[in-house]
Image (cartoon, rainbow, N blue to C red; front, side, top):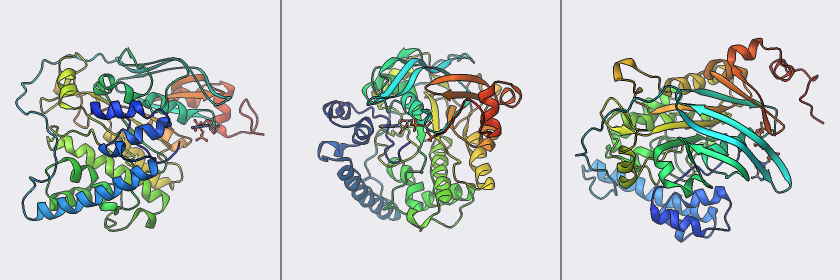
Length: 408
Ligand SMILES: Nc1ncnc2c1ncn2[C@@H]1O[C@H](COP(=O)(O)OP(=O)(O)OP(=O)(O)O)[C@@H](O)[C@H]1O
């Protein structure tokens, strides 16, 4: 998967309209443009990102200055109303289908990549997508995320058909938050590690600068990278960049723990690897009326969230891989009986990971989907992966040169 863009969607209607006028853009470019107001003024993605970086740096400086003096009133801060009464709990079915691909086909030019893929992602699942190189795993992830549209077939989100890109369907986007961790971390090169990790807190919360610094330090410590706040991404190894990306995800999660769900993420954010959008006030109110809502511990109605990881442990040493795999697990919600059927507070209900790493398959995944030559050729649990006698699975598991997977 390509690095860079991250904004899967925006619930901002003006943004949607502007996006729909960007006909000449690729889907990836469109989604970059969808992530902020600058889209009307930038004629290329590069220009947009450059301006975005400039704007971000200015805002970060302003935030630091104002929080130092105790004045945060100048920071633009979209906010939901806080007076909404808790909504009734709708018990989610354990086997609720969050995402479904039905007979999905995708080609790039004359090159057919997917030839009728059927995949179902249910609430609570940790799903791995495996298969040979170039077989369409990242493409499948991008289709599920709504960064690509299928040529043929259907993609359903919470039982409703998504037409085109996710950015074209704000109502659906409001009901299922999707995040994506790209292969290379996609950090802002012009921002320090600390600013990258704290980006969302600087941009979307009322936290003071010193408080954010503490949160950033905690997140970096959790991924084994204490003390690197002042470094630039270019000064990090590939593995460190991945861990910084994970640290940023943890900081984001921390927003919920601090009961700051009144924050919107609609401008989140070109260049970020973990893409999360929450909903505008309107669409959030809309979501509240629907049975897809659950009650979390703070009595707020939160849509389900699915995170998609594209090879999160590629290139990492075994210990760093374990750190990342355990982080993925620990950020994943599991149903908590003491919370009336709802889940723990991170809000991440399911995740999907494209991986070649056996350690990741065993440590971070429950169910595997095997793609080969554009279709799903096998599905099963990790235990079945180890014991089944399907030739392609055995070849993949053993790394043998003999079998259905052939490289010329
Ligand atoms: N935007 C694109 N334009 C043209 N071809 C593309 C595009 N994206 C992917 N491809 C092609 O589609 C095929 C599948 O790519 P994809 O990244 O989905 O494979 P993959 O299974 O994730 O591979 P790997 O395991 O090597 O990362 C490749 O041949 C790739 O070159």
